[in-house]
Length: 328
Image (cartoon, rainbow, N blue to C red; front, side):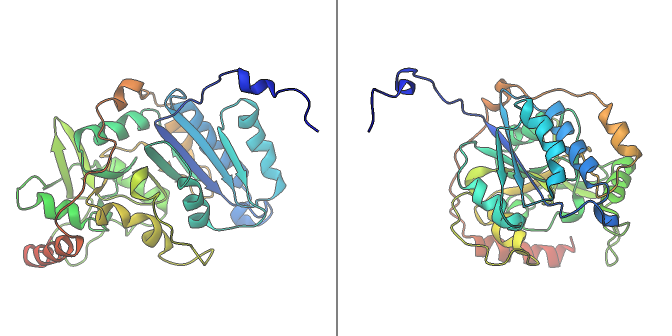
């Protein structure tokens, strides 16, 4: 039997809407295997870097635990107790990254969402730099916080279709050798910037756009990137498999291109892929200073999606022809 009226009804409290949400997904099955033995420290470094570099007035954090070992609580609770984690999700079994990310994105209100693995170190100024790109390039659909020039052609048919014939797209040495080295070191693969069948490689030349002195590199990865939420939150496709090669391409990466938007990245390093071992770069990047994003940085952004009248198949076909003829 109910007696009285719920006093919460009379408080008139309002929810606050953020402009940007960061989703971090992690799975640490144990801390004994050699591969995972530093995972708690890596996770802590990731979360510390996020909380130290974002503006909490504009940005919220969602943390998704894919049924990790209970030892992670010692790390997570530090940030929960400070009220820095807006939402914490813990699955009873490991659902895989795609399931966890898509399930979360379909229910958020923020117009922009950063999806990150839990082994990424964010550098001060990254939010500001990301939204400078969004402000200057209205067709930005995905922006990575570190240069990804080797991914210029990955789901970027629209970007080349729109810009190459008008000569808006340029090719030159924009990313410094230092930033190239950091990219390769973080990913642990020295061959990522090679191009064996071309006269240039991704270290010597990058495709980029420039507007109002703002530069954006063509190409973005998926271990960390900031998306227009509306590009990916309407999909009802269900990820049947927990782990499947190409799943992130299918559920997340191809959406911007199909809807007429570009995959871009910053021309300077504002995020570092730690991997499963802390190294000297982590200490160095923690000490760097940078500007924080402000509410005003979002005011000039185009939030709603613009419809494309040129069908995707045509954009894709034209790009393939141009790429072959011009030997891009």
